[in-house]
Amino acid sequence: MEDRQKSARKQGFTLVEQAMATAIVAVLACVAAPAVGQLVARNRLQVAQSDLMVALQQTRALALQTGRVTMLCPSRDGRQCSDDVRWETGWLIGPGRGDHFDQLIGTPIHVGGGHERVNIVSTVGRRRIRFQPGGTAGGSNASFTICPAGEAEGALVVRISNTGRILGAKASQAQALRCAQGG
Image (tube, rainbow, N blue to C red; front, side, top):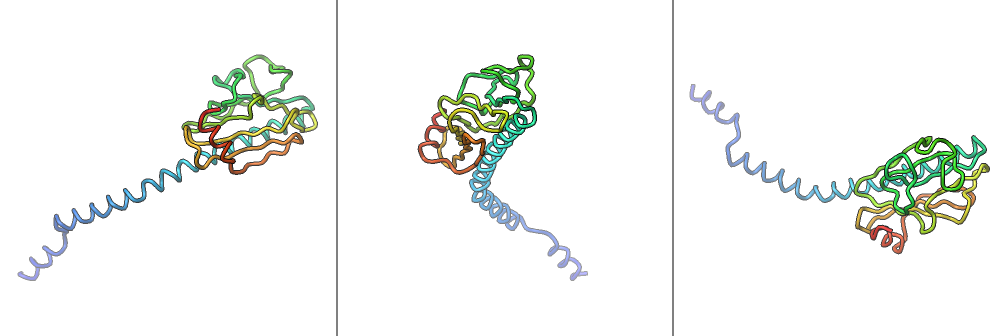
């Protein structure tokens, strides 16, 4: 009987043991939290960069398929283009003529974007990206810089050449600073 009582006492944890285990878990969580936060922020930038590159590729492919000028433009409301260099609220894809869609106003072929806690800023003077029927991007080379809102660290860039080539890379220090300032 006495052995039974001793073994019954050995099956549980004492309050001190539970407090120590909780303290160790809390310390480990505090050490890991900043790294997880940085990982999430980095992933947010990479997703925004990928989304923008896909939108540019879709716009170029649409121009090649339809044989018409196709445009990618920033949008705040998902219905019409905005005249801004800020793209984080979203963008529209559709056939373009000048600064307007050929189809019904407010009826784009594709609506995309909408990234929180991220700044996406295009090259000054390039508020719209137009792909010609041959797949070239009319005008001069353009770039988009993607950074955490208000921060320059870890910024990424998407470049579009006149020939229509789309490339993702790390942003230069000057691009990252401009992005962090919002334009």
